[in-house]
Image 1 (cartoon, rainbow, N blue to C red):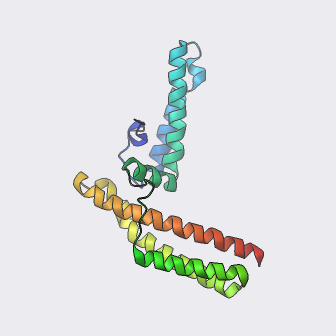
Image 2: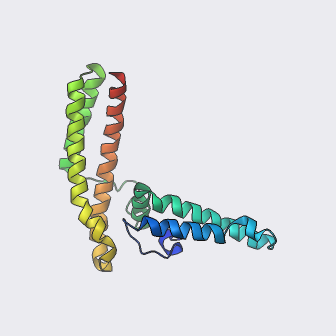
Image 3: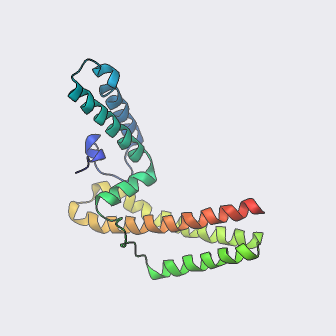
Length: 178
């Protein structure tokens, strides 16, 4: 059983936690678990301090990065398992069309097409962000029995965003060529 980073930091599970609270907990625990302060402790205690210092670093890295935090929460709820990445067909059709345009760019570089695809990706992304924002904001206050539905929405958002990121990475390659 892995340690719950939110519990470790005495914070409620949230997609939008206070960055100041995360930082405050990280620095407090960094001082508490600094190996130099436990140099005279028995070897078992030194090992435990080292484990807690590493846990603190991992918790901070995960919770302070919005994408890592989202993946962490979804993963904790078993929503990022391989083979369970299905997305709505309409979104997949849009992405497939964008990928086809990218493949055409491989053979026929055209700045107008690059800009059109960029605009489509930006519009899709803006729509995604606007749709998920209220869910992310309200998640921490949701009763436990309604959280699974919100988590499914967030999971779909997360997977869609990853698709769009891959398209953006491909677009960046074409932008450097021209």
